[in-house]
Image (cartoon, rainbow, N blue to C red; front, top):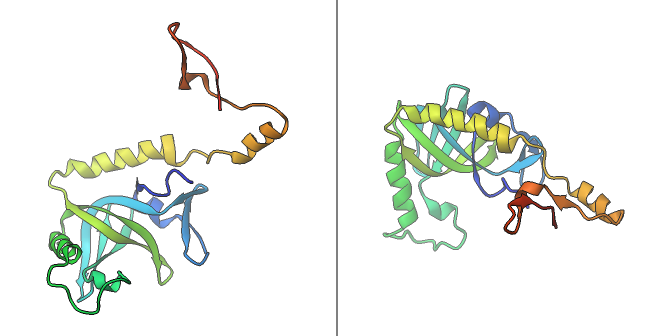
Length: 192
């Protein structure tokens, strides 16, 4: 399974909005050949539109504006929910509390699932955190750049290359820094 598949990838708006969309029954999103399904953004709320069932808002991080939707009535999302309204739905209560944090001009950290709606990428919000320190936005930028270089933009591991080595009768080795040889502290190759 792809390592970035189930984590919230720290990403800038420009990078999120430029993900490659693979059209399947459920669209998937690729960043340099790696599947990305969830994202984390930090930015300023520049637009807010509250309806009965959802709150739609835009997050601007300086590189672009990302549309976000926070569902307020989770019975529409849960197929197992009863048709009657529950007085004590903790998920709906939590969503309503999060919606109160989304005000114009506030700095927020938003995490959620990347989805397509009417041909555009948006975030189906899982959680919202009000950030009080303005340095958080710059820190998020730095983390995004570092993670892109060290993790996200690396080529995906080549299973095909490993299969070819096995076909030739060779055993692939991990790089020597993955294990040590007993008490000597010398690096030793380790068989997979």
